[in-house]
Length: 249
Image (cartoon, rainbow, N blue to C red; front, side, top):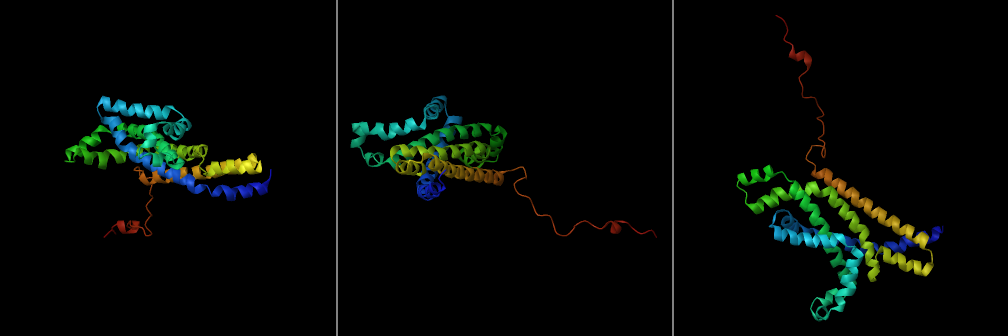
């Protein structure tokens, strides 16, 4: 094992971290924003609308993200109407194609995760909020969604980790994120073993940080009293035992 090559790989692959994190964070944000209304439609809308959302999530969850990326990057460019539209300015760029694919894929998974959380909210809780005079939108925004998000957070943490690792597929459309930089360095040094060990270690570090962040957020949102421990008072507030006894006359 060539440790000099591994040290050089750390410096080179670190230059792709910004692109990896940008793709991951932007895809998760866009996917989450898109998934919130879709999750409500999936959970509470009429059957026809719910089945439409289900069709979208079924396709994107049931097919490999690599195939989806190839269809967006290579397939849309074969359609004349797409090349003639204003969207071609974006779709001809591999970064935006990768971001679009990752966002749609993340939205599909997050929709189903939030849908299960919404369906797990006790019905009595929403009925109590309605009885207090809250409008349906207020109930959804102030009661239903916060509870559902707290329930769905462990599963959503897995989605964050999955998207972090899935961002490596961007290297297949010429983007030089961590995996893309690793492949480029391997083609120049012919040392795949050392370089991909370093790449794997970088992804392991990123996913570990994502897991820790999710666990921290879970503790902050906990409602069972275990998240925050109050400091014990420095001075006793009880009355000394000898003062509780009344002296005999």
